[in-house]
Structure formats: structure tokens, C-alpha cells
Image 1 (tube, helix red, strand yellow):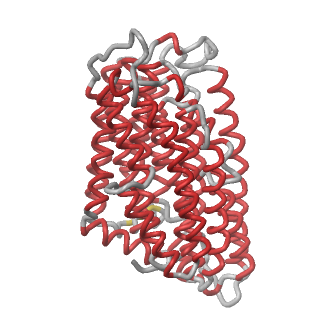
Image 2 (spheres, one colour; image 1 turned 135 degrees about the vertical axis):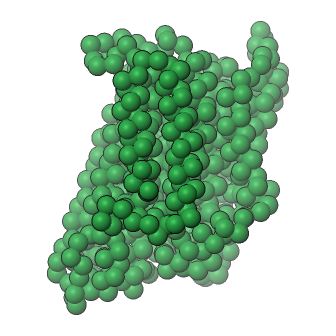
Image 3 (cartoon, helix red, strand yellow; image 1 turned 90 degrees about the vertical axis):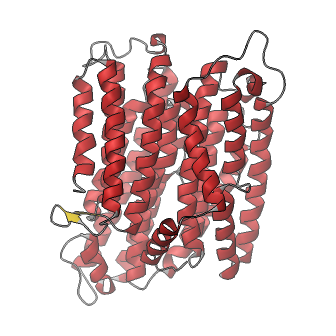
Length: 491
């Protein structure tokens, strides 16, 4: 059953490459997204299921990130239908002339979107650390054509930067896996016979401590590069700002979580080995550094898509900090992963609407959005308050939970720096976002009807973030507790 969640989107992606009908591709994309969401719901009822001789499985951590991925992809697929119909053909240059499918860039786009879904699903289901590495690399390869969709020199530069920087990171993560294999082959008391996660956890106490710790550091830097933690984040602002906005939504809301899950698997392993304390320092340091770097670059940032990209760097830092603090901060960090994914995907989809209406990514050139595109602008303001951690949105709850965890663990200095950076980023983002919505619209720019596909998906995502700010459903709360327990923490 769970294997179908991988090969279903993969087969659909292959079919999309060969389909010449736009209508058929739209049905294929949305139908696959709906089927995937239904499959995730069914798999949630039996999360202990295994496939491929134990190489695929679904625990609480995997289920959390799989559900996020499926929900975001469904919203993005609905947005894609209208986006591709609005996207002018002139955006595509003749740079790819002579390549296969060059006369059907939309076929490549939809096909790669579906392969992206398949690879992200594989990350969440992988119970073999080698397969997890392969799946994370597959997400890189499937997303590169999506970043390059507009076929412009800036998108080409962003694509190559993404491939090169992430390849270095994934290479370090591979070295971390090799170190882990050495730790197992030369155990202190008796080790695992394979890199299946269940077997590694069972024999974690017998792994050599020095090799295990070195493996964690390499995995943290390697997958941290893909996650967008500073100072390995350099690919992220370019890729997010040059991608189509729906791709940016998936990159920020789902792809970064896949890399985060890779790090969490390593944390889980060290926790089982009784060495969880070793993870605290590096995670806290990279978390606070990421927040600090994001704050510096968000200040006076002229490009609103790059501003959102640096906001993702900030929130990846928040996640790392929360896990590094341990204890009660861990469930808060996992809830924050959900809240951030929903809010950031919402904002990137809305950024696409603003770009289509104002034909610019410069914040200073977008004014009077409430008059020119009222639904999008109202949601844009709501999304800003959500991502900035204002009540009653869900990010306020998760950020406050991390703060409580920091104070409970005695990390008062980290808590103070955390609050300071959150405040700086709030002010910096407000200075860029609020003037975009307020004031008079540019001359000649009159309101016009907004298609449902442009505002309904971000509205649904925003509604979910609002609900999570006032009510966390009991099944979700239990899932977060089980996931935190896998990381050695209790809610």
C-alpha cells in the first residue's frame, strides 16, 4: 500500500512527459495529488506498515512530514492549473531548442512536479539510511528543471548554483553515512548488519561513539545545506526567487522539510545510543546563526521573493534550535515545521499573484495592492502576520512552545537571543510588506477579477494556520508527541 505512494506519482510523472494535451496533464496532476492525499490518509490508519522488505515504512516522524508534503502538493496542483494558463509563452526562450520535449515546456514542468512528489514521498518513507540519501538526491534532480522553467539567464544561474551547492552538501551526507557504516562494522559491543534504521536503532548502543558523532556532524552539515541552514544556505535565496512561485512554495514548504527529516533520523539514532546531548550544541549554534544571517539579509531587502526566501532560512534555524534545546521544545519545533510550511507556501503563492499583477519583484514598486488585487493583498497581510509569529496564528503557538522549552532547559541566553532575532525580523519584514498592500495603486492599474485558482489554495493554507493557532486537534497532538518521543523528548 505505502509503496503505491511512491510509484503512483512516479508513473504519473512519466505519463505527463509523453502527454501533449494540456487538459490531460491538468487532470493527471490534480488527480494524482488527490489520490496521493487519499493514500496518505489511508496509510495514517496503519503507520506501522512496511514494504520492500522493510526498506519502506511509516513512523510518526515520517507521517508528519508526508502529510505536510501531500497537503502542500495538493494546494500547489490546484494553483498550477491557473498558473500555466496565465503564464505567457514569451517567458520561454529558445535556449532549449533541439532538446527532447523542447516544444512542450509544460509537459516537462508537470512531469518534474510529479517526480518531485514521488521523491519527497520516498524521503518520508525510507527506513534505510542509504535509500534516504538516494531519495534526497532525487529531490535535487527532479527540482532543477522546475527552477529553470523560465529559461532566463538568472534562472539558469540559480539552477546551477542549486545543483553545485546541494551536491557538495549531499556528498558530505554520503560521507556521514559511510562513517555510520564504519561505526557499525567496528562496534564497541555489537552492531547492526545493515543500515536499515530499525536495525541501527536496535543495536545503537553497540556503535562506536566517535564514529557516530563524526557521522552526525557530517549529516548535519550535508543535509543542513539542503535544508538551508546558514552558512550553507547560499543556494536558497536565488533558487526561491527565480523559480515559479508555486515551485518556491514547494521548495520552502516541503523540500526543506525533507532535508530536516534526514537530520532528525541521525538525531534519533544518537538518542537511541544514549548520546543525545552531543547533538544539542551544533543544532543550537546553527539554528541561532541561521536566524541571525536571515535577520541581516531581510533588513532593507528590496526583492519580496528573496525576503520570503531568507525568512525560510530563519525558520529552518528555529527548527534546528528547537530540536537542539530538547525536552518540551521538540514538539514545538515539529509543530513549527507544519505551521511554517503552510504559511510560507501560502505567501509564495500570493507572491506569484503579485508578480503577475505588478510585473515586478521589487517591493518598492508594488503599492496599493489592496486596491489593485484586494483578495490577494488581504491574504498577503494575513500571511505576513502568520509567518511573523503573531497571534492568533499557529506560528505564535509553536514559537512560544520553543521559548518555553528554552527557559525550561535553562538556556536563558539562547532564549534572549531567539526573542531578539524574532523581533528584528518582524520589524524588517513589516517595513517591506505593509507598504506593498497600502496606499494608492499605480495609475492605470485597475482592479480586475481574480481567478479562484489564484486565491483559493493560499486561502485554504492560511485558514489551516489560523485554526492551528487556536486549536491543535487531538490526533495531531498525539502524532507530535509520538514523533518527539522518537527524538528522545516528551511533550
